[in-house]
Image (cartoon, rainbow, N blue to C red; front, top):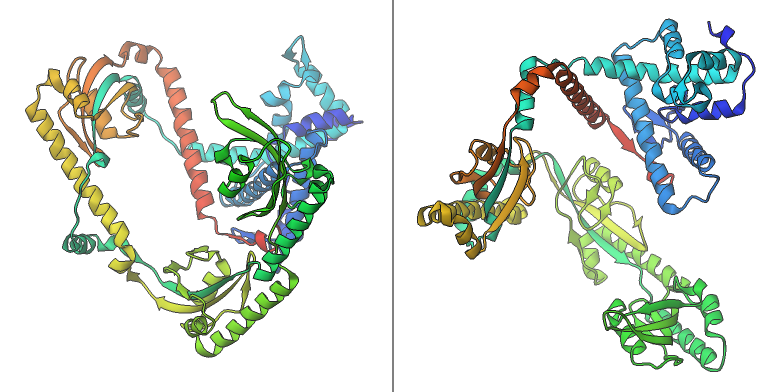
Length: 591
Protein backbone atom coordinates (compact mmCIF):
# COMPACT_ATOMS: atom_id res chain seq x y z
CA UNK A 1 0.00 0.00 0.00
CA UNK A 2 2.84 2.35 0.78
CA UNK A 3 5.16 1.37 -2.04
CA UNK A 4 4.35 4.54 -4.00
CA UNK A 5 5.61 6.63 -1.07
CA UNK A 6 9.04 5.02 -0.92
CA UNK A 7 12.13 5.95 -2.86
CA UNK A 8 15.66 6.90 -1.78
CA UNK A 9 16.15 8.07 1.85
CA UNK A 10 18.57 10.43 3.59
CA UNK A 11 20.06 9.61 7.02
CA UNK A 12 19.21 12.98 8.59
CA UNK A 13 15.50 12.49 8.01
CA UNK A 14 15.61 9.07 9.67
CA UNK A 15 17.33 10.56 12.71
CA UNK A 16 14.78 13.39 12.92
CA UNK A 17 11.88 10.97 12.73
CA UNK A 18 13.44 8.68 15.34
CA UNK A 19 13.65 11.53 17.85
CA UNK A 20 9.88 11.52 18.07
CA UNK A 21 9.34 7.84 18.74
CA UNK A 22 7.18 7.82 21.85
CA UNK A 23 8.83 4.92 23.68
CA UNK A 24 11.86 2.68 23.48
CA UNK A 25 11.54 0.17 20.68
CA UNK A 26 11.22 -3.12 22.49
CA UNK A 27 10.26 -5.23 19.53
CA UNK A 28 9.79 -8.93 19.25
CA UNK A 29 8.78 -9.28 22.90
CA UNK A 30 7.54 -12.85 22.55
CA UNK A 31 10.96 -14.01 21.39
CA UNK A 32 12.47 -12.98 24.72
CA UNK A 33 10.61 -15.30 27.01
CA UNK A 34 12.57 -18.38 27.84
CA UNK A 35 12.22 -21.07 30.48
CA UNK A 36 15.32 -20.58 32.64
CA UNK A 37 17.23 -18.69 33.79
CA UNK A 38 15.33 -15.40 33.76
CA UNK A 39 16.28 -11.94 34.96
CA UNK A 40 12.65 -10.94 35.43
CA UNK A 41 9.11 -12.13 35.03
CA UNK A 42 6.52 -9.49 34.23
CA UNK A 43 2.83 -10.41 34.03
CA UNK A 44 3.79 -13.99 33.21
CA UNK A 45 6.42 -13.12 30.60
CA UNK A 46 10.03 -14.13 31.30
CA UNK A 47 13.03 -12.06 30.21
CA UNK A 48 16.41 -13.78 30.00
CA UNK A 49 19.56 -12.11 31.38
CA UNK A 50 21.01 -11.96 27.85
CA UNK A 51 18.00 -10.13 26.44
CA UNK A 52 17.83 -7.77 29.41
CA UNK A 53 21.51 -6.97 28.92
CA UNK A 54 20.76 -6.14 25.26
CA UNK A 55 18.02 -3.74 26.40
CA UNK A 56 20.48 -1.98 28.68
CA UNK A 57 23.14 -1.76 25.99
CA UNK A 58 20.60 -0.29 23.55
CA UNK A 59 19.59 2.33 26.14
CA UNK A 60 23.23 3.27 26.82
CA UNK A 61 24.02 3.43 23.09
CA UNK A 62 21.01 5.68 22.38
CA UNK A 63 22.00 7.98 25.24
CA UNK A 64 25.60 8.20 23.98
CA UNK A 65 24.42 8.97 20.45
CA UNK A 66 22.15 11.76 21.66
CA UNK A 67 24.81 13.19 23.99
CA UNK A 68 27.86 13.28 21.70
CA UNK A 69 29.16 9.96 23.02
CA UNK A 70 30.07 11.55 26.35
CA UNK A 71 31.11 9.33 29.27
CA UNK A 72 28.15 7.99 31.27
CA UNK A 73 28.68 8.59 34.99
CA UNK A 74 27.34 6.25 37.68
CA UNK A 75 24.34 8.44 38.53
CA UNK A 76 23.26 8.62 34.87
CA UNK A 77 23.90 4.91 34.44
CA UNK A 78 21.60 4.15 37.40
CA UNK A 79 18.92 6.44 35.96
CA UNK A 80 19.15 4.76 32.54
CA UNK A 81 18.87 1.32 34.14
CA UNK A 82 15.73 2.36 35.99
CA UNK A 83 14.35 3.94 32.82
CA UNK A 84 14.92 0.69 30.91
CA UNK A 85 13.23 -1.35 33.61
CA UNK A 86 10.17 0.92 33.71
CA UNK A 87 9.88 0.96 29.92
CA UNK A 88 10.08 -2.82 29.79
CA UNK A 89 7.29 -3.18 32.36
CA UNK A 90 5.14 -0.64 30.49
CA UNK A 91 5.73 -2.32 27.14
CA UNK A 92 4.62 -5.72 28.42
CA UNK A 93 1.62 -4.75 30.55
CA UNK A 94 0.26 -2.25 28.02
CA UNK A 95 0.77 -4.66 25.10
CA UNK A 96 -1.29 -7.17 27.08
CA UNK A 97 -3.94 -4.51 27.73
CA UNK A 98 -4.12 -3.77 23.99
CA UNK A 99 -4.81 -7.47 23.33
CA UNK A 100 -7.30 -7.81 26.17
CA UNK A 101 -9.25 -4.80 24.89
CA UNK A 102 -9.14 -6.21 21.34
CA UNK A 103 -7.62 -3.07 19.87
CA UNK A 104 -7.06 -3.38 16.12
CA UNK A 105 -5.40 -0.98 13.69
CA UNK A 106 -6.22 -0.96 9.97
CA UNK A 107 -4.05 0.13 7.05
CA UNK A 108 -6.60 2.83 6.33
CA UNK A 109 -6.11 4.32 9.82
CA UNK A 110 -2.34 4.26 9.41
CA UNK A 111 -2.61 5.93 6.01
CA UNK A 112 -4.79 8.69 7.51
CA UNK A 113 -2.22 9.24 10.27
CA UNK A 114 0.55 9.46 7.68
CA UNK A 115 -1.38 12.08 5.72
CA UNK A 116 -2.24 14.06 8.88
CA UNK A 117 0.82 13.99 11.16
CA UNK A 118 0.92 15.15 14.78
CA UNK A 119 2.37 18.44 16.00
CA UNK A 120 5.82 16.94 16.65
CA UNK A 121 6.25 16.02 13.00
CA UNK A 122 4.79 19.35 11.90
CA UNK A 123 7.43 21.17 13.95
CA UNK A 124 10.35 19.69 11.92
CA UNK A 125 11.91 22.63 9.98
CA UNK A 126 12.23 20.63 6.72
CA UNK A 127 8.42 20.46 6.55
CA UNK A 128 7.86 24.19 7.07
CA UNK A 129 7.72 27.26 4.85
CA UNK A 130 8.14 30.63 6.56
CA UNK A 131 7.79 28.94 9.93
CA UNK A 132 4.51 27.16 9.15
CA UNK A 133 3.89 23.50 8.40
CA UNK A 134 3.40 22.89 4.69
CA UNK A 135 1.36 19.79 3.83
CA UNK A 136 2.66 19.49 0.26
CA UNK A 137 6.30 19.66 1.37
CA UNK A 138 5.69 16.98 3.97
CA UNK A 139 3.90 14.68 1.50
CA UNK A 140 6.74 15.26 -0.94
CA UNK A 141 9.21 13.88 1.61
CA UNK A 142 7.01 10.84 2.15
CA UNK A 143 6.87 10.14 -1.59
CA UNK A 144 10.57 10.71 -2.22
CA UNK A 145 12.20 9.21 0.89
CA UNK A 146 11.64 5.49 1.33
CA UNK A 147 13.36 5.10 4.70
CA UNK A 148 11.68 8.14 6.23
CA UNK A 149 8.27 6.80 5.20
CA UNK A 150 9.15 3.36 6.60
CA UNK A 151 10.31 4.79 9.96
CA UNK A 152 7.18 6.90 10.27
CA UNK A 153 4.89 4.06 9.28
CA UNK A 154 6.51 1.72 11.83
CA UNK A 155 6.18 4.35 14.53
CA UNK A 156 2.49 4.79 13.77
CA UNK A 157 1.95 1.02 13.76
CA UNK A 158 3.51 0.79 17.24
CA UNK A 159 1.88 3.87 18.82
CA UNK A 160 -1.59 3.99 17.23
CA UNK A 161 -2.83 0.91 19.17
CA UNK A 162 -1.82 2.70 22.38
CA UNK A 163 -3.63 5.85 21.32
CA UNK A 164 -6.77 3.85 20.57
CA UNK A 165 -6.49 2.01 23.88
CA UNK A 166 -6.08 5.25 25.83
CA UNK A 167 -9.02 6.82 23.98
CA UNK A 168 -11.16 3.80 24.82
CA UNK A 169 -10.25 4.02 28.51
CA UNK A 170 -10.82 7.78 28.64
CA UNK A 171 -14.19 7.47 26.91
CA UNK A 172 -15.42 5.41 29.85
CA UNK A 173 -15.65 8.72 31.73
CA UNK A 174 -19.08 10.36 31.55
CA UNK A 175 -19.33 14.03 32.54
CA UNK A 176 -22.64 15.86 33.06
CA UNK A 177 -23.31 19.58 33.06
CA UNK A 178 -24.00 19.33 36.80
CA UNK A 179 -20.50 17.84 37.30
CA UNK A 180 -18.98 20.79 35.45
CA UNK A 181 -21.10 23.26 37.42
CA UNK A 182 -20.13 21.78 40.80
CA UNK A 183 -16.43 21.69 39.87
CA UNK A 184 -16.62 25.35 38.77
CA UNK A 185 -18.28 26.35 42.04
CA UNK A 186 -15.78 24.37 44.13
CA UNK A 187 -12.80 25.80 42.22
CA UNK A 188 -13.97 29.40 42.42
CA UNK A 189 -15.45 29.42 45.90
CA UNK A 190 -12.42 30.78 47.80
CA UNK A 191 -11.44 32.27 51.12
CA UNK A 192 -8.51 33.88 52.86
CA UNK A 193 -8.33 33.02 56.55
CA UNK A 194 -6.32 33.08 59.75
CA UNK A 195 -6.51 29.72 61.50
CA UNK A 196 -5.78 29.07 65.17
CA UNK A 197 -4.36 25.56 65.22
CA UNK A 198 -4.74 23.63 68.48
CA UNK A 199 -2.16 21.09 67.44
CA UNK A 200 -2.63 17.80 69.31
CA UNK A 201 1.13 17.12 69.00
CA UNK A 202 1.75 20.02 71.41
CA UNK A 203 -0.22 18.30 74.17
CA UNK A 204 2.37 16.87 76.55
CA UNK A 205 2.38 14.76 79.74
CA UNK A 206 0.11 12.04 78.38
CA UNK A 207 0.10 9.04 80.72
CA UNK A 208 -0.88 5.55 79.59
CA UNK A 209 -1.42 2.67 82.01
CA UNK A 210 -0.91 -1.00 81.21
CA UNK A 211 -4.67 -1.59 81.61
CA UNK A 212 -5.45 1.17 79.10
CA UNK A 213 -2.93 -0.29 76.68
CA UNK A 214 -4.40 -3.79 76.96
CA UNK A 215 -7.96 -2.46 76.56
CA UNK A 216 -7.04 -0.42 73.48
CA UNK A 217 -5.29 -3.44 71.96
CA UNK A 218 -8.41 -5.60 72.43
CA UNK A 219 -10.64 -2.87 70.96
CA UNK A 220 -8.43 -2.51 67.87
CA UNK A 221 -7.21 -6.10 67.64
CA UNK A 222 -8.39 -6.51 64.04
CA UNK A 223 -5.84 -3.86 63.02
CA UNK A 224 -3.16 -6.39 63.91
CA UNK A 225 -4.56 -9.37 62.05
CA UNK A 226 -1.94 -10.93 59.81
CA UNK A 227 -1.52 -13.81 57.44
CA UNK A 228 0.96 -16.69 57.80
CA UNK A 229 4.28 -15.58 59.29
CA UNK A 230 7.73 -16.91 60.07
CA UNK A 231 10.74 -15.97 62.19
CA UNK A 232 14.41 -16.88 61.86
CA UNK A 233 16.99 -17.40 64.59
CA UNK A 234 20.37 -16.37 63.27
CA UNK A 235 24.01 -15.63 63.96
CA UNK A 236 25.72 -12.93 61.94
CA UNK A 237 29.52 -12.98 61.78
CA UNK A 238 31.21 -9.81 60.57
CA UNK A 239 34.70 -9.89 59.08
CA UNK A 240 37.00 -7.48 60.92
CA UNK A 241 40.78 -7.06 60.96
CA UNK A 242 42.60 -9.17 63.54
CA UNK A 243 44.92 -7.66 66.12
CA UNK A 244 47.83 -8.77 63.90
CA UNK A 245 46.22 -7.00 60.92
CA UNK A 246 45.86 -3.82 62.96
CA UNK A 247 49.47 -4.05 64.10
CA UNK A 248 50.65 -4.50 60.51
CA UNK A 249 48.76 -1.35 59.48
CA UNK A 250 50.35 0.59 62.33
CA UNK A 251 53.82 -0.65 61.34
CA UNK A 252 53.22 0.35 57.72
CA UNK A 253 52.02 3.81 58.81
CA UNK A 254 55.17 4.30 60.91
CA UNK A 255 57.39 3.25 58.00
CA UNK A 256 55.70 5.80 55.73
CA UNK A 257 56.04 8.44 58.46
CA UNK A 258 59.79 7.80 58.50
CA UNK A 259 59.90 8.21 54.69
CA UNK A 260 58.10 11.57 54.56
CA UNK A 261 60.00 13.02 57.54
CA UNK A 262 63.27 11.92 55.93
CA UNK A 263 62.53 14.14 52.93
CA UNK A 264 60.37 12.05 50.59
CA UNK A 265 57.75 14.05 48.64
CA UNK A 266 54.53 13.87 50.70
CA UNK A 267 52.16 14.22 47.72
CA UNK A 268 53.95 11.54 45.69
CA UNK A 269 53.96 9.10 48.61
CA UNK A 270 50.22 9.80 49.14
CA UNK A 271 49.51 9.04 45.47
CA UNK A 272 51.45 5.80 45.66
CA UNK A 273 50.56 4.46 49.11
CA UNK A 274 47.46 6.17 50.59
CA UNK A 275 44.22 4.18 50.79
CA UNK A 276 42.07 7.30 50.97
CA UNK A 277 39.94 8.74 48.13
CA UNK A 278 42.15 11.83 48.19
CA UNK A 279 45.20 9.79 47.11
CA UNK A 280 45.05 10.83 43.40
CA UNK A 281 45.24 14.46 44.58
CA UNK A 282 48.35 13.80 46.67
CA UNK A 283 46.22 13.42 49.79
CA UNK A 284 44.92 17.02 49.57
CA UNK A 285 41.80 17.56 51.72
CA UNK A 286 41.47 21.29 51.11
CA UNK A 287 40.42 23.71 53.87
CA UNK A 288 38.17 22.45 56.69
CA UNK A 289 36.93 23.55 60.09
CA UNK A 290 37.55 21.45 63.19
CA UNK A 291 34.00 20.07 63.38
CA UNK A 292 34.24 18.64 59.85
CA UNK A 293 36.68 15.89 60.81
CA UNK A 294 36.59 13.02 63.31
CA UNK A 295 37.95 14.13 66.68
CA UNK A 296 41.41 12.44 66.78
CA UNK A 297 42.18 13.72 63.27
CA UNK A 298 40.90 17.24 64.01
CA UNK A 299 42.72 17.45 67.35
CA UNK A 300 46.02 16.57 65.69
CA UNK A 301 45.60 18.80 62.62
CA UNK A 302 44.54 21.90 64.59
CA UNK A 303 47.44 21.51 67.05
CA UNK A 304 50.03 21.66 64.26
CA UNK A 305 51.87 24.49 62.53
CA UNK A 306 52.12 25.05 58.78
CA UNK A 307 54.60 22.59 57.26
CA UNK A 308 54.51 20.13 60.15
CA UNK A 309 53.87 16.42 59.64
CA UNK A 310 52.11 14.44 62.37
CA UNK A 311 53.05 11.04 63.67
CA UNK A 312 50.43 8.39 62.69
CA UNK A 313 47.01 9.22 64.16
CA UNK A 314 44.45 6.44 64.59
CA UNK A 315 40.75 6.94 63.79
CA UNK A 316 37.96 4.53 62.88
CA UNK A 317 39.12 4.84 59.27
CA UNK A 318 42.68 3.66 59.97
CA UNK A 319 46.03 5.40 60.48
CA UNK A 320 46.58 8.96 59.18
CA UNK A 321 49.80 10.85 58.58
CA UNK A 322 48.81 14.51 58.37
CA UNK A 323 50.62 17.45 56.82
CA UNK A 324 49.33 20.98 57.44
CA UNK A 325 49.74 23.19 54.36
CA UNK A 326 48.00 26.43 55.41
CA UNK A 327 45.89 28.00 58.18
CA UNK A 328 43.26 30.74 57.75
CA UNK A 329 40.16 32.30 59.32
CA UNK A 330 36.97 32.06 57.27
CA UNK A 331 34.22 34.67 56.87
CA UNK A 332 32.40 33.32 59.93
CA UNK A 333 35.53 33.89 62.04
CA UNK A 334 36.30 30.18 62.34
CA UNK A 335 39.80 28.77 62.09
CA UNK A 336 40.35 26.56 59.05
CA UNK A 337 43.23 24.23 58.25
CA UNK A 338 44.33 23.13 54.79
CA UNK A 339 45.87 19.69 55.10
CA UNK A 340 46.92 16.60 53.21
CA UNK A 341 46.99 13.10 54.62
CA UNK A 342 48.15 9.58 53.89
CA UNK A 343 45.63 6.98 55.04
CA UNK A 344 46.59 3.40 55.85
CA UNK A 345 43.44 1.38 56.36
CA UNK A 346 43.31 -1.54 58.78
CA UNK A 347 42.74 -4.24 56.20
CA UNK A 348 42.01 -7.88 56.80
CA UNK A 349 44.76 -10.22 55.67
CA UNK A 350 44.21 -13.39 53.68
CA UNK A 351 45.07 -15.40 56.79
CA UNK A 352 42.33 -13.59 58.72
CA UNK A 353 39.82 -14.18 55.93
CA UNK A 354 40.65 -17.90 55.84
CA UNK A 355 40.30 -18.17 59.64
CA UNK A 356 37.03 -16.26 59.47
CA UNK A 357 35.61 -18.63 56.84
CA UNK A 358 36.75 -21.67 58.84
CA UNK A 359 35.09 -20.33 61.99
CA UNK A 360 31.84 -19.80 60.07
CA UNK A 361 31.95 -23.35 58.69
CA UNK A 362 32.70 -24.80 62.14
CA UNK A 363 29.84 -22.82 63.62
CA UNK A 364 27.51 -24.08 60.87
CA UNK A 365 28.51 -27.69 61.59
CA UNK A 366 27.67 -27.23 65.28
CA UNK A 367 24.38 -25.56 64.37
CA UNK A 368 23.47 -28.54 62.16
CA UNK A 369 23.92 -30.89 65.11
CA UNK A 370 22.69 -28.81 68.03
CA UNK A 371 20.82 -25.78 66.62
CA UNK A 372 21.73 -22.12 66.22
CA UNK A 373 21.25 -21.17 69.87
CA UNK A 374 23.62 -23.86 71.14
CA UNK A 375 26.18 -23.06 68.42
CA UNK A 376 26.16 -19.42 69.50
CA UNK A 377 26.80 -20.46 73.09
CA UNK A 378 29.69 -22.76 72.12
CA UNK A 379 31.39 -20.13 69.95
CA UNK A 380 30.59 -17.20 72.26
CA UNK A 381 28.45 -15.47 69.62
CA UNK A 382 25.02 -13.86 69.94
CA UNK A 383 21.98 -15.65 68.51
CA UNK A 384 19.19 -13.24 67.57
CA UNK A 385 15.63 -13.79 66.37
CA UNK A 386 14.00 -11.70 63.68
CA UNK A 387 10.58 -10.15 64.09
CA UNK A 388 7.90 -12.03 62.19
CA UNK A 389 7.78 -11.58 58.42
CA UNK A 390 5.32 -12.55 55.74
CA UNK A 391 5.39 -14.45 52.47
CA UNK A 392 5.45 -11.34 50.28
CA UNK A 393 8.30 -9.74 52.29
CA UNK A 394 11.64 -8.99 50.68
CA UNK A 395 13.23 -7.44 53.79
CA UNK A 396 13.89 -9.18 57.12
CA UNK A 397 14.69 -7.19 60.27
CA UNK A 398 18.34 -7.51 61.21
CA UNK A 399 19.26 -9.23 57.94
CA UNK A 400 18.19 -6.75 55.27
CA UNK A 401 16.97 -7.69 51.81
CA UNK A 402 16.89 -11.48 51.85
CA UNK A 403 14.20 -12.83 49.50
CA UNK A 404 15.96 -16.21 49.39
CA UNK A 405 15.65 -16.59 53.17
CA UNK A 406 11.97 -15.58 53.05
CA UNK A 407 11.27 -18.33 50.51
CA UNK A 408 13.32 -20.79 52.54
CA UNK A 409 11.42 -20.02 55.75
CA UNK A 410 8.02 -20.56 54.13
CA UNK A 411 9.03 -23.84 52.49
CA UNK A 412 10.61 -25.51 55.52
CA UNK A 413 9.77 -26.70 59.02
CA UNK A 414 10.79 -25.08 62.30
CA UNK A 415 14.40 -26.03 63.08
CA UNK A 416 15.48 -26.31 59.44
CA UNK A 417 18.94 -24.76 58.94
CA UNK A 418 19.85 -22.82 55.82
CA UNK A 419 23.26 -23.26 54.21
CA UNK A 420 25.96 -20.70 54.97
CA UNK A 421 25.16 -17.26 53.49
CA UNK A 422 27.98 -14.90 52.54
CA UNK A 423 27.00 -11.25 52.31
CA UNK A 424 28.92 -7.95 52.48
CA UNK A 425 31.99 -9.23 54.40
CA UNK A 426 29.79 -11.27 56.72
CA UNK A 427 28.41 -14.78 57.12
CA UNK A 428 24.85 -15.55 58.17
CA UNK A 429 23.77 -18.81 59.78
CA UNK A 430 19.97 -19.01 60.08
CA UNK A 431 17.28 -21.54 60.99
CA UNK A 432 13.49 -21.36 60.95
CA UNK A 433 12.47 -20.65 64.56
CA UNK A 434 8.76 -19.79 64.36
CA UNK A 435 5.82 -20.69 62.16
CA UNK A 436 2.22 -19.53 62.36
CA UNK A 437 -0.83 -19.30 60.08
CA UNK A 438 -3.45 -16.52 60.04
CA UNK A 439 -3.16 -14.79 63.41
CA UNK A 440 -3.29 -11.60 65.45
CA UNK A 441 0.08 -10.16 66.34
CA UNK A 442 0.52 -10.41 70.14
CA UNK A 443 0.49 -7.22 72.17
CA UNK A 444 4.18 -7.55 73.08
CA UNK A 445 5.10 -7.44 69.37
CA UNK A 446 3.01 -4.35 68.59
CA UNK A 447 3.15 -2.60 71.95
CA UNK A 448 4.92 0.51 70.65
CA UNK A 449 2.40 0.88 67.82
CA UNK A 450 -0.59 0.45 70.14
CA UNK A 451 0.94 2.91 72.61
CA UNK A 452 1.57 5.47 69.86
CA UNK A 453 -2.01 5.23 68.58
CA UNK A 454 -3.51 5.47 72.05
CA UNK A 455 -1.31 8.45 72.89
CA UNK A 456 -2.45 10.17 69.69
CA UNK A 457 -6.10 9.56 70.60
CA UNK A 458 -5.64 10.99 74.09
CA UNK A 459 -3.73 14.00 72.73
CA UNK A 460 -6.51 14.66 70.23
CA UNK A 461 -9.24 14.50 72.89
CA UNK A 462 -7.29 16.83 75.14
CA UNK A 463 -6.62 19.30 72.28
CA UNK A 464 -10.37 19.48 71.62
CA UNK A 465 -11.09 20.09 75.32
CA UNK A 466 -8.44 22.85 75.35
CA UNK A 467 -10.03 24.45 72.26
CA UNK A 468 -13.51 24.31 73.82
CA UNK A 469 -12.28 26.00 77.02
CA UNK A 470 -10.49 28.60 74.90
CA UNK A 471 -13.74 29.46 73.08
CA UNK A 472 -15.71 29.65 76.34
CA UNK A 473 -13.18 31.79 78.21
CA UNK A 474 -12.46 34.32 75.44
CA UNK A 475 -14.49 36.63 73.22
CA UNK A 476 -14.03 36.32 69.42
CA UNK A 477 -12.34 39.72 69.19
CA UNK A 478 -9.73 38.42 71.69
CA UNK A 479 -9.07 35.09 69.97
CA UNK A 480 -5.98 36.03 68.00
CA UNK A 481 -4.22 37.83 70.84
CA UNK A 482 -5.00 35.06 73.36
CA UNK A 483 -3.89 32.35 70.93
CA UNK A 484 -0.58 34.18 70.46
CA UNK A 485 -0.17 34.56 74.22
CA UNK A 486 -0.81 30.84 74.73
CA UNK A 487 1.63 30.01 71.89
CA UNK A 488 -0.89 28.30 69.64
CA UNK A 489 0.17 28.60 66.02
CA UNK A 490 -1.81 31.01 63.83
CA UNK A 491 -1.66 29.91 60.20
CA UNK A 492 -2.43 32.37 57.43
CA UNK A 493 -3.90 30.74 54.32
CA UNK A 494 -4.95 32.22 51.00
CA UNK A 495 -6.92 30.78 48.10
CA UNK A 496 -8.65 28.17 50.28
CA UNK A 497 -10.97 25.98 48.19
CA UNK A 498 -12.94 22.83 49.01
CA UNK A 499 -9.99 20.63 48.07
CA UNK A 500 -6.95 22.81 48.74
CA UNK A 501 -4.00 21.91 50.95
CA UNK A 502 -3.09 24.34 53.73
CA UNK A 503 0.54 24.80 54.75
CA UNK A 504 1.48 23.06 58.03
CA UNK A 505 -1.96 21.44 58.22
CA UNK A 506 -2.22 19.55 54.96
CA UNK A 507 -5.39 18.58 53.16
CA UNK A 508 -8.31 18.76 55.58
CA UNK A 509 -11.55 19.03 53.62
CA UNK A 510 -13.61 19.30 56.81
CA UNK A 511 -11.67 22.43 57.79
CA UNK A 512 -11.95 23.87 54.28
CA UNK A 513 -15.71 23.24 54.22
CA UNK A 514 -16.23 25.01 57.57
CA UNK A 515 -14.24 28.06 56.42
CA UNK A 516 -16.12 28.29 53.12
CA UNK A 517 -19.45 28.12 54.98
CA UNK A 518 -18.68 31.49 56.59
CA UNK A 519 -18.85 35.03 55.24
CA UNK A 520 -16.13 37.64 55.30
CA UNK A 521 -15.38 38.88 58.82
CA UNK A 522 -16.83 35.84 60.60
CA UNK A 523 -15.26 33.26 62.92
CA UNK A 524 -15.97 29.58 62.59
CA UNK A 525 -17.01 27.52 65.56
CA UNK A 526 -14.50 24.91 66.80
CA UNK A 527 -13.61 22.55 63.95
CA UNK A 528 -12.65 19.10 65.21
CA UNK A 529 -10.67 16.76 62.97
CA UNK A 530 -8.29 13.83 63.39
CA UNK A 531 -5.33 16.29 63.42
CA UNK A 532 -6.52 18.58 66.19
CA UNK A 533 -8.92 21.46 66.58
CA UNK A 534 -9.20 24.80 64.77
CA UNK A 535 -10.90 28.17 64.99
CA UNK A 536 -10.67 30.20 61.79
CA UNK A 537 -11.31 33.87 61.02
CA UNK A 538 -12.41 34.54 57.44
CA UNK A 539 -10.64 37.66 56.16
CA UNK A 540 -11.81 37.55 52.55
CA UNK A 541 -14.34 35.60 50.45
CA UNK A 542 -14.74 35.06 46.72
CA UNK A 543 -17.63 33.20 45.12
CA UNK A 544 -18.14 31.64 41.72
CA UNK A 545 -19.33 33.97 38.93
CA UNK A 546 -22.24 31.97 37.50
CA UNK A 547 -22.78 34.41 34.62
CA UNK A 548 -19.23 33.69 33.50
CA UNK A 549 -19.92 29.98 33.94
CA UNK A 550 -22.93 30.12 31.64
CA UNK A 551 -21.06 32.08 28.98
CA UNK A 552 -18.06 29.71 29.02
CA UNK A 553 -19.92 26.45 29.59
CA UNK A 554 -18.70 24.75 26.42
CA UNK A 555 -15.03 25.56 27.10
CA UNK A 556 -15.31 24.62 30.78
CA UNK A 557 -16.99 21.32 29.88
CA UNK A 558 -14.18 20.49 27.46
CA UNK A 559 -11.46 21.36 30.01
CA UNK A 560 -13.08 19.47 32.88
CA UNK A 561 -13.79 16.43 30.73
CA UNK A 562 -10.16 16.30 29.59
CA UNK A 563 -8.96 16.68 33.18
CA UNK A 564 -11.23 13.88 34.48
CA UNK A 565 -10.35 11.61 31.56
CA UNK A 566 -6.62 12.03 32.20
CA UNK A 567 -7.13 11.44 35.92
CA UNK A 568 -9.10 8.27 35.15
CA UNK A 569 -6.44 7.13 32.67
CA UNK A 570 -3.70 7.65 35.26
CA UNK A 571 -5.68 5.68 37.83
CA UNK A 572 -6.26 2.90 35.28
CA UNK A 573 -2.54 2.73 34.52
CA UNK A 574 -1.63 2.81 38.22
CA UNK A 575 -3.94 -0.14 38.90
CA UNK A 576 -2.62 -1.97 35.84
CA UNK A 577 0.94 -1.65 37.10
CA UNK A 578 0.00 -2.49 40.70
CA UNK A 579 -1.86 -5.65 39.64
CA UNK A 580 0.95 -6.90 37.38
CA UNK A 581 2.83 -9.76 39.00
CA UNK A 582 6.53 -8.88 38.78
CA UNK A 583 9.44 -11.09 39.83
CA UNK A 584 12.69 -9.14 39.78
CA UNK A 585 15.78 -11.39 39.68
CA UNK A 586 18.08 -8.78 38.12
CA UNK A 587 20.31 -8.61 41.20
CA UNK A 588 21.30 -12.25 40.57
CA UNK A 589 22.78 -11.35 37.19
CA UNK A 590 23.53 -7.61 37.28
CA UNK A 591 25.15 -5.24 39.78
